Structures are given as structure tokens and as C-alpha cells.
Length: 312
Image (cartoon, rainbow, N blue to C red):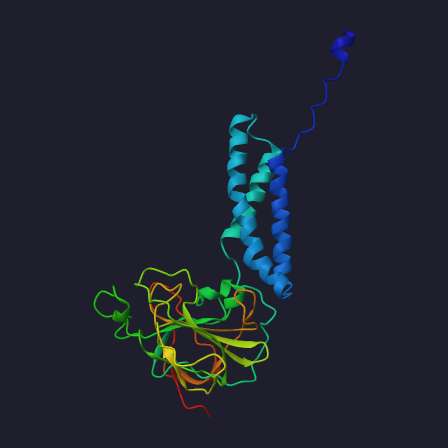
């Protein structure tokens, strides 16, 4: 046996991690850290982590995944341990970034108001969105709208007459909106045209009213009818007082009333506050204090039917 044949074969060169694979791993690590910051419920840092950071990292996985596929096809060998790890990391990051897995964590979840809130309307209405979980309240994935409500009027299982092509086809359109609580009006936006159902306006809340109820306690009533607002900035209002009419202004695909509490006057920089109503009937049963529950099936208004009873 010759000396040449006795020599051991050279050791394989260590696998070289490509730049895109290192970026993929970094994104996965950043996503985990961002979720951790969100669930620490630190207020503003957690708001931005959940509302912006998670979505930004999720969006970045799309071009990086495309780049990785190109590199895999045109830079053989296609199957490498580093590439497999990178694709798993990108898939993990993309899922967490594009599909909300949890209700938005907020530092205000244990907050309780010292004020009494009534429903912001008379008669029986249906809760489209409401409650503290994603199944019944699509707002729950947004920190500033975590405990927001949408209400409408339903008759014989429908929300509109005819074909619903016009805003005034909807039973809720033009219905009175009353003050849920005593407070001071600090913002009024009026004059925005009501959109045709199925379309939206760039102004998120459309015509709306913001009421200061107490320190760091601000009530929003939104998507109001153009030129229907009866109050002015600086005016003190009382619970049950007529404020406006329901419209279809702003980011609203169909007429409804949007209501939520938050801890600042600035949207979307604040955190949502749990809003509980007093002495109302839900599906005919009295509730002393609670959160009306929205629809599980978003294709139809199947949430709780609620009506105000006398405040005791």
C-alpha cells in the first residue's frame, strides 16, 4: 500500500452561511423579542411593538423568502442545512407577522372606570363587534381599539331594506346617538360626506365626537352622519343627551355606530380602556355591568341584542 493511498481524504469545508440566511435568523430573533416587549405591557413601547414592529418584520419575510428561493434554484446545491433553517425561520416569522394570534396585550386590561356608562342609543340594537376576544371582536387585535364596539339595528334578520345600495337603506342610518356618560366634549369632526355602502373614506373615524370623561379617560363615538352633530367643543354633556345621528362616514363599509374608550386623545397612540355598560338587557336578560358580545360569524349580525334599562 503506497503512502498516497494511506492518506485520509481531506475534511469537507465548513458550510458557509449566506447573508440572506443570517438575515432570516435575525428576523426570527427580532420577532420573538418584539412579541416579548408587547406582552410585557409597557404602554407606548408595547403598542408600537405590537402594532408596527410585528407587522414590519412579517412584511420583510416576503422579499427575503423570494430571494432565498432564487438563491436555492441558481446556487446549487439546493439542499443545505443553513437554507433549511433559514426557510423554517422565515415561515415562523411570516406566520407571526401576518396573522394575529392573540388579542393585543395592553397595560390597561385591569383598568375599571369609576363612572357609569349607559348604552349610546335607545331601543334594541345588535352588537356587531364587542367583548374582549378576537372571536367576537375584530378590534381586539389593535391596542388602541382593543375593547371597541360596533352597533347596528337589525330587523327580521337584516340590517337594511331593499338592496342596501344606499346608506339610508340601512335601518341604523340616521338613528339618534345619545351620550353614554357625563363629560366634556374635547373634539368634534363634522362635515365629512357619508360614503356609499361598500366604500370607505380616508378619514378613519369620519365624523366623530371625543368626550373627556375623566383624567386619561376619553370616549370616542364615530362614523356619524354628516352635519348631524348637536354639540360643540368645550360643551359639558349629560348621559342620555342627544349628540348626533348614525352615519357612514370614514373607514366604514356600512352604516353603524363605533364606540370605544382610550387613555389619550391621540389615535392610535393610546391604549384602549375596557368599556362596560350598566343596567342593560342582552338577548332579553338583564345585565348589571358587562360587555356586550359581538358576532362570531362576521358575515351576519349575530351578536347580542342589547337595550338600555333604567340606570339604578
